[in-house]
Amino acid sequence: MVQYCYVDSLLELDIPNEDVEGGVRKLMDNEVVSLCNEFINASTDLPTTELEWTMANLVKYPQVQAKLVEEIKLVLGPERRSNVLKEDLDHMPFLKATILEVLRRHPPAHMVIPHRAGLDIEIGGYMIPKNAAINVLVADIGRDPNVWEAPMEFNPDRFLVKSGLGQDEKISVSFDVAGRKEIKMMPFGVGRRMCPGNVLARKNLEYMVANLVWHFEWKAIDGEVVDLDEKEVFTIMMKNPLRALISPKL
Ligand code: HEM
Image (cartoon, rainbow, N blue to C red):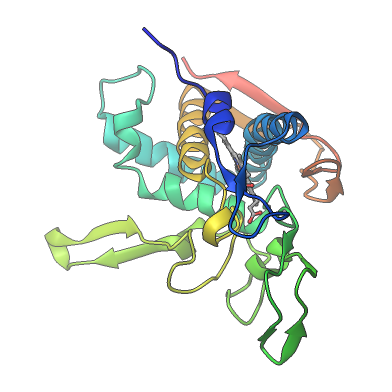
């Protein structure tokens, strides 16, 4: 069987050649290395950082952890003690909402990768000249009090939508992460350069968090308070790493 990998796709790419009008060229070795480096870092550091922020919030706010466990119990039924499976995640709106709330409140990247203006353009009364480096304050967008009610509060419920009445009542999550209609937060960037791993990253986080709270109880260490201060490393990490009492559920 012929294996086709990410590097093969890079070697096949034709990209615009800025030295030749309308021309194309192949990627140079240093560009391939840089893209692989970006891919490996982006797919490991950011999800790991986000997992720590999630568990920190679940330790700090035990009522949110308890609500997650309730949701899992409801989906798995009274008898099942096995792992939460990928298929189960589709029936867990509160879990999805929790991950979105972590991404809003603690995006692991406070800025996107720098972009460049392709032409002179005026946006919102500001002239942006061609070739200017552009960056976006991702964290500030997700914490904007004009857009989010009590933005510094950790409240996954804000992403839940109720529909139907009585027995037909349904709770779901409907959020435009890609910012197609409006941009209320952008932890994965938006547009053509939006993170290609965003669906995978959210699913993985949901899967890991669901199983971590299903099999273990996460509690604050006596006398310690979970500190949500931030520190910039490659990603925005917890200044004081999470310490917790983790006990297996029997
Ligand atoms: C919580 C997890 C993650 C977050 C918050 C995140 C966020 C981001 C952000 C903000 C960007 C820059 C977008 C822009 O410049 O407009 C980006 C780019 C990228 N991400 Fe992610 N990411 C995550 C996980 C992943 C995973 C799991 C993968 C791969 C499996 C991945 C692969 C990439 C790649 C290849 C780029 C560069 C895209 C480009 O330059 O066009 N990321 N990510």
